[in-house]
Image (cartoon, rainbow, N blue to C red; front, side, top):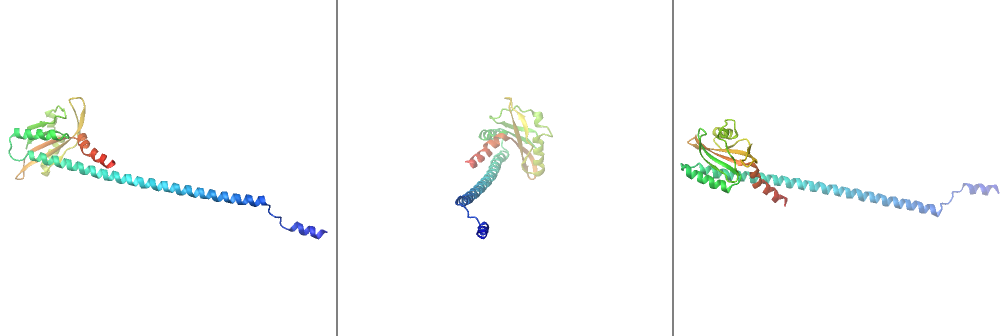
Length: 219
C-alpha cells in the first residue's frame, strides 16, 4: 500500500477552473490596459503635432502680415515723398506753394507740417495740418542738434531725401505725439538750392497703414 501513496504524492496537482479563469481575466485586462495606454499616447502625439502645426501656421501668418505691413508703410511714405517733391519743382510763387501744401496736408492725416526752406535753412513758407494742433517754437526748429537739422544735413550730404530721428512733441491741447522729420533737398545742377521739410506723426502713420494691413491678414 505504500507504493501507490508515494506515486500519488509525486504527481502534479490539477489546476482548478477558478485559477484558469483568474489568469485569463488578468491577461485580458492587461491587454486592454496596454491598448488604452497606446491610444492615449497616440492621441497625445496627435495633439502635439496639431499644436505644432497650428503654431507654425500662426508664425507664418504673422511673418506674412509683417512683410505686408512693411510694404504698405514703404508705399505710403514713397507716395507722400513724390507729392512733396512736386512742391519744390519750378519757381512757383510761395503763395501757390503754400496752397498746394495745405491741400496735401488735408488729404494726409499722417503729415503734421510742411516747410519750404532755403539753402541756409531759413524759413520761406510753411503749412500746418488742421488735425494736429501744435504750437511750434522757431528756436526749437533751428536747433542744430535737432531732428530737422540732422535730416537736412544728411540730405545735403547725400543729395537725396533723408529722415531724422523721432522725438516727442507736445500738442497745445495738452496731449502729444511722436514725430519724424523728412528732409528733401532741391538740387539744381548739383547744387542744393533749398529744402522741403515734412513732419510725420508716427502714430497716425502706423494707424493708417500698418494696422489696416495686420487686420486684413488676421481675417
